[in-house]
Length: 450
Image (cartoon, rainbow, N blue to C red; front, side, top):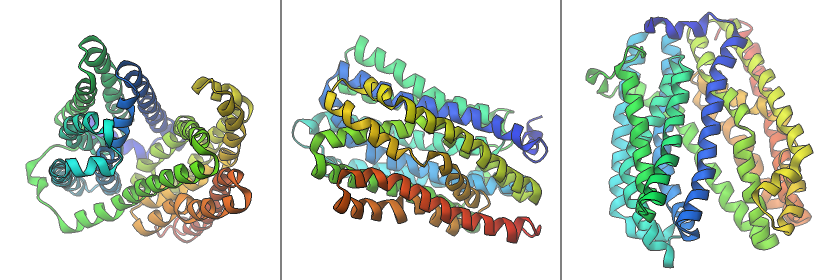
């Protein structure tokens, strides 16, 4: 029965649970990553390069609004996992209702503001000259659908918190596949140009929302859409906000890193160096999908068992997740080291880029085998509801270490300093995370005090 599904998180073997949770998450991340790549190819070939520029102008705004849904989802899902583990279904249901309320309030409010200041925001994000009009068309249509995307991202994390990763995987696949099919129909067949690209994205969000809504209205879900739980609870809202802020802070730092990298590399090597980073950034998105999937799969398992006070299972979930993710990281590392040239040749035929990118990529991925500890360690604190260490450990890698390194090392080592900053930041953040995670295990889990 649906009511017993979450209980398997506290009963089944940890290894089996991790694989069952991580594989669907990995597939969903992979499909979404492929969608971004293929969608860019379609738009560039069927509309033109100006369309790619226009979409890139809009993405920071639409992604930030959608990220609010993700943040609310991850923050609230930590509460839900622990509540279900403790057998407090009423608190889980109330949290879910509060998540819906906050997602609607914040995203609709942001969309209203975004549309009101549309003609000022678009140029501010680079939509100038010939880019302005297609960006304006895409921006206006896509923003109408962004609240639905935010609800999907929020709902997806809740589905995973209930212990139903396959449903969560389908929720991630639907908008990706739907967007590609709609791109073909609206852009290629109906020749709707930029409007077609925008409506393809918006309609794909609606398809995903329809599926997520069906899930929570069906017998598959333990949590229901209950208007009584929509009333905001101060303590629950505060916990959602504190834990969700970790996700928002991570997104903000990622944006700063992209901004810094593009400017520093342009100064050091011009457009070619920026292109090299563009290829490497794509590979970071694609190649690490199994490690990120393992991290996503770990979250509900750790949260549920922590809430159930099953300390030994929490400890085993940490150790097993780090082991599995490290093995996957080692395989990714080996693939990059051996096939770097072949990978780069898929993206471009430019001989300069092909000659420069492989070695840079090898440096960037040099610490991949150990990065699992940092990802799982910071995710653990978020899963158990400890927002402050979760935030600090999440920011160590790119915020506290990478940004200072990438600002200083290039002054002495040139472009090589940029690439060396990646493994050094990974190493330092892993050491810091390992220290605090070991301390947490010894003081809390080994003593059984939680």
